[in-house]
Length: 120
Length: 113
Length: 243
Image 1: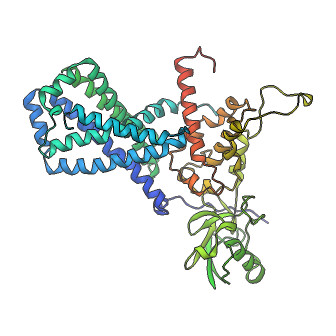
Image 2: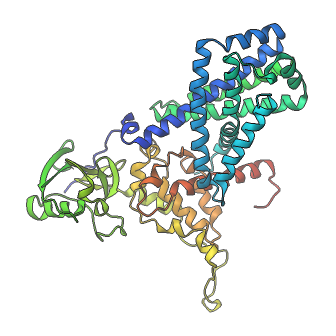
Image 3: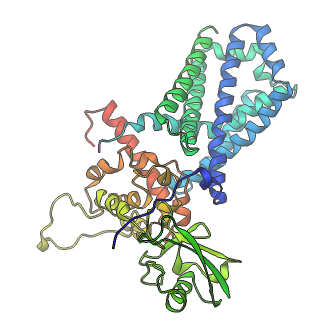
C-alpha cells in the first residue's frame, strides 16, 4: 500500500467561508482609515505651520464632499476598531471589569477631547 | 529556533491600537464638525497654534501620530499577507518606512510652530 | 432521508479528491458520525474516517461539515437543512477520504514541552504538590484541550503559514506556564517566542469560536504575546534585571 497525501490548495476564498472571517477583514481594513486620518493630521500640521492663511485653506478643504465622505467612513471604521479592540481586551488581559473600564475610559477620553476643543 | 524580534514591531502596534481605540473617534468628530462648517473653537488658528507651540503638546502630537501610523502600517502589512501577497519583507519595509516618514514629517512641521 | 455529500480520496487510484453522495435515514437524535457509520455499515464499507468515543472527549472525529470545523459526533443532523457537505479537516493533507495527516500538529505539540517541568525534582517522600482553587483556575480551562485540531482548521494564518505553531500547541504550553508547580516557561519560550510561534497569530479569533471545549486558545496566545513582549523589552532595555 502506498501513501500519497493530497494537499488542498489555499486561496483567498477562506475570507468568504464564514461571516467571522469577513468581519475580521473589515476590522483589519479599518487600518486604512485610521492611518489615513493620521496622515490627514500630518497635512494639518503642515498647514498650521505655514500660517493662518494656510490653516484657513485646510479648514476650507475639510468642507469638500470628498472630505466629508472620508470622515464619515473613517468614523464608522474607527468606531468598529474601538469596539472590536475593547471586546478582545479581556482575552488578552483577564482582569475583572477590564472591558467595562475600557468602555468607560473611551467615553471619558472622548468627552475630554470634545471639551478641550470647546465643543461640549 | 531563535526568539523573534517581533516584539519590537508588535509593542508599538499594540500601544497604537489601544491609543487609536480610545482617541481617534473623538478626533475624527472634531474635523468632521469643521467639515460641516461648525469649526470647534479649539481648531481655530489662534487656539490650535497656541496649543501646538507648547513642547508638551508637540511630544503628545508626535506620540499620537507616530503610534497611529505605526499600528495602521503593521495591520496593513498583515492584511496584505492575508490577501495573498507573499513578499512580506518588501511590504513590511514599505509600510514601516511610510509610518516613520509620516512621523518624521510631523516632527518637522511641529518644529516650525 | 438526508443526503450527505462526502469528499472521497483514494491515494492508490485517485489523482484528486471528488465528492460522492449518499442517502441516509434521518433520525432526530443522529449526529453526522451516526450517518457515517450507517454508510460504512450498509452502503459503502470503503469510506474511511477517524472516530472513537462518540461523546466529544477524544478529539478524533474532527472534520469540515458545511465548511465549518466540527466534531462529527457533536454535529446533529437536525441542525442542518438540505445536503450536508462533509470534508476532511482543512489545512491538513488528506491521507484517505476523511482521514488527514496530523504529523505536523503532533510534532508541534511535542515542541512546546506540554508536561510538568518543576524547578527541582521532588522526592516522593516530600509528598504531593498542593494547589489552591485560585491556582487551579489559572490553567484549568487550557487543560481541557482534546487535541481535536478544529482550531487549526479554523485558523486562516495556519492555512497561509504552515510553519505557524498553531492555537492548540500554544494553549497547551500556556496551560503549563500557568501551572504553579511548573518552572519551564523559559524552555517553552524557544518554541513560543520564535517567529513561527505566537507571532504569526493576527487574532482572528476563529480558533476560540470553533473550540468544542471552550479552551479559548486565542486568549492564551495574546497572553503569551504580551508576556513575550515584556520579556523582550526587559532583555534589551534592562538586561541587568533578572527575570
